[in-house]
Each structure stands twice: as structure tokens, then as C-alpha cells.
Length: 201
Length: 201
DNA sequence: AGTCCGAGTAATCATCCGATTACAACCGCT
DNA sequence: AGCGGTTGTAATCGGATGATTACTCGGACT
Image (cartoon, rainbow over all chains, first blue to last red; front, side, top):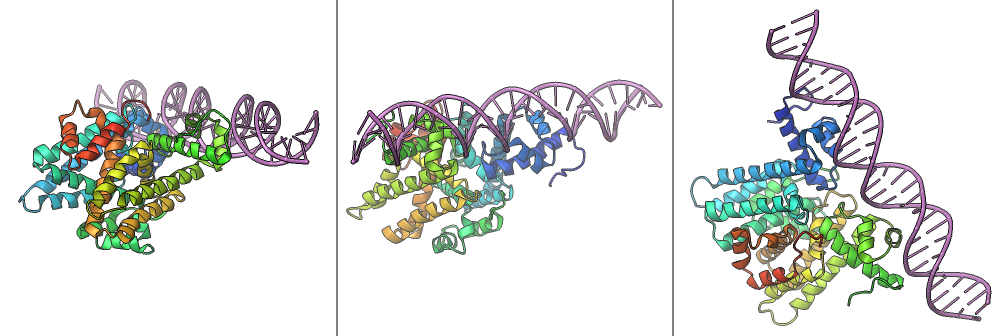
């Protein structure tokens, strides 16, 4: 359910509403590029309120990052249920399905570039390690499969972050990349869900 | 050769010197996070001079991006020479070797997240398409191989951007990821060349 | 009815940053 | 020596941005 942005709201609901908006904004503008005012307007509240609810922009980003990984792992866990047959493929589909949560994958990508940041770097490494550990220990994927799975995820992040679909009609190489991609069902979801055009998200 | 930063210099040499410094800074702090003053101090010149030589910060970044792709393609071309046997593996090694050019891979990753930017987005897509076209048309790699090659490149970018080596000794999952990685020779180069610790680069 | 507490904002501040301007130092040339 | 073009800087400006302060509004409960 999408939370209403206009009416008065409990503090907890407002937090979640702002986290959603912030995910979209951080995903579209990266960490430093996104302003707390962007987030506030996207969430339909005033800028000081965003700061007061989360303390600092940095803490807001850490909260967004944590929520993103929880959503990612939840999607993986749900897709991993059932027969072992085609489990990794279902998980891959679930990953691409996260595109419906605007900015989530791009926010993760953004965090993965901030390894040098004293506060965000360690948190981002923890997130990555948690996903890797989930694949290896909980699902039991072997090394080569886990690497290939993650690598393809990073490629998808790149395709989405680049907004490569914008060139789908004009660049034959991009058309090829999408049409004959080894994961055609994913390509279709990307086409439906990925952000495109000049709007920020 | 590394260019001297103190003495008076021809405009062309100074440009190259600043491009090198800017690559490191953009790679460490991302596009919005890096300031023209950071670049200037890294290059040993004053901030206004950086702006004057390149016009705007945006144009500077576009120049850095262009240089990065040229260096990348040059490394690929050089590695692709010789026997077809193990060509992709040599190119993968050349990719990781680019870590010696501080910030280059991270700058590419940064650009790949800026698809929504009206000026940088199209340029970044052009870069990606150029590399894809090189692999497919010039080298003649088939679709599945090209996808897997790029995907692993993006995974390497993530590992580097995260500074995952910082956790090599403390996180057994990270140790595993590096030690038993399917590309052990690359892992070794990463260990030698990747930025680590709390210093910006 | 009145009061109290949590939700929410308007106004403002200090800082940072990209850009501009005006000026200085150096070198090649006649 | 003196002139001119090129390299380079100090000083500064204006806008943006994260954060703080002081305030208002609305409803729940006596």
C-alpha cells in the first residue's frame, strides 16, 4: 500500500513514507546529489521535518540502506521457497521485480561506491556481506554460481542506472543487448519497470 | 610517466595532469561529492585554474570520462592481440590492471549511475555502448560471453568501490570471496592495487 | 472547556562550492 | 630592455544546502 502524504500521520507511518521517498531520490540523484529538501518534497513534508525525524542526512541514508537490504533479502527468501528446480532463476526474477520499489537498486549501487566513507562504507560492506552470506550459507549456492548471480545483478544495476532503455530504439547494440539477453524474461520486466526519460525518476 | 605538479607546465601537460588527479578524486568521492577544489589540490594547482581550463565541473567530468574509456579500450586492444586462446582472460586481467590508474574504474561506475543526468547520462550510455560494440563487433565475442564478461567487470567495480578488501581479515565471507574467487589471478591484482583504508584514495 | 503532547512548519543561519574577476609571474621574441 | 602572450593565483561573490530555533495546529483526555 502507498501511504497518503497529505494528511496528518503517525510518526511511524511518516517515517516509512519518507523512507520510500528517500529511496527514490537517493536512487535518482545519488547520496551527495540528493538534498534533504528533495526528499521532503517527494514525501510531501517540510525539509526540517525530515531532518528532525532522522537526525542527519547521513542517518537517513543509513536507514534507507538498511530498509533496502531487508526488502532485498525478503524478496530473495520468498522466491527461494518451493522446489530447488529453478530457484536461482526465480530469485533473479525477484531481484528485477524490486525495480517496482523506485530507486532501491540504484540506492544499493550508490552505497556500493561509498566504500571510502567512514560511516557509510562499513554499513555498505555489511550489506554486501550479508547478501553473500545469505546466498552461500542459507541457500547453499556454490561459489561459481554465487559469483555469477551477483555479477549479473551488478550488470542489471548498471543497465538500470544508465537508463540504457532510453537508447533501445536508437542504438542497435542496445537493442541487441536487451532482445537477445540471456535472461529474456528479466529484460521484459526491466522494460516495464525501469525509470527512463529525463524525469529524475 | 607521472607529471610533475610543482613547476610551470604547458597547458596540454597540465590538462593531462589534472585529468589524472580528477580521475582519482571523482572515483573516490563520486561526481557530486567531488569538489573542483579537491581536484585542484590533488593536482597541485589552484581551484580557479581547474575551472578555467575545463570551463565547468561538468565538462571536466565529461573529459575524465572520455579519457577513461579511451584508456579502457586501449588496454583491451593491447590484451586482445595474439592468439585467440585465452583472449577474454587476458582482457579480464587488463581490466583489473586498470586499477593502477587510480579511480578509473570507480569513475566509470559513478558515470554509470548518472543515466538520469541530461548531459552526463547520454555520454555515459555512449561509453557503455562503445565497449559493448567493441566486444561484439571488433573482438567478435558471442552474446553470452559478452554478457558474462561485462557482468564480472561490474562485480569487480563493486568490490573495489566497496573497498571490500578492508574486511578481508575480519569477515570470513569476504575472505572466501577473494580466496576462492573463480578468477584467482585477478583477485591477487586487486589485493595489490585496490584502494583501501580510510584515506580517500 | 481547558490543557498537554505529538505532528508539522516558517524563518533563518552558517557553511560550502562553483564560478568570476582582476591581477601577478614567467618566458620567448625582437 | 621591453613587449606580449600564456601560465597561474588571490580575493570574492552568489546560490545552494544541512541544520537549528521558535513557533502553530490538532486531537485526546480529563
